[in-house]
Length: 258
Image 1: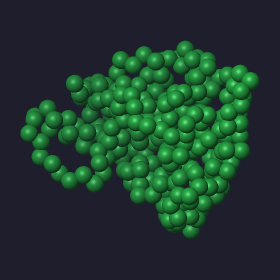
Image 2 (image 1 turned 90 degrees about the vertical axis):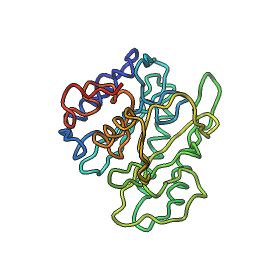
Image 3 (image 1 turned 30 degrees about the horizontal axis):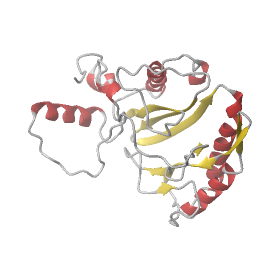
């Protein structure tokens, strides 16, 4: 569905809203029982992950852009975390192929009693066997070494274990019954990310203790977050919807948070 309308010139905020709207319909949104697991990511070019437009963000997608689309749904807290890369210019084909093949390698390598470091080593070997030619200059495709896949637990998108995408990582083993998101990040850049730009994703600390709040507005907002999102991730766009992020929980109007 998303690939049918994503094209150069589309406003990223509109794209995210359309994807999220379809997700809500397909999963038959029922508040915390079933719905969207986290905001739709549309990380573009040098932004590696966790970007979704905030209210007032009018960025549009260009022909020469490379964008990672990241979306998820949940039923009874069990999360599905999905992503794919969009690029229109064929000069980026080998970059997309590198990441796709590296992800497939990670999926094939993963399994019960497999060490996390072995998954990372296999991913890196596949990813870094590719090169990208841009304007007559050849760039090696590299794994972003400080981004990882991760385990997922009920209502907790990032579980206790991380799946590296380079060799030399954690020797802890995968265990029966665990659920993982195998994520790979390929780049022609420095292969190391830093936190930057405006925050767009928010989430309660899963293990945070109760802290009494004094300000009435803060109490109201926290109550809304607990009721609507629990410990799942959310974004400012959702808080500023008329339904406050979920019509199934709050009704179609009257729950906008300002």
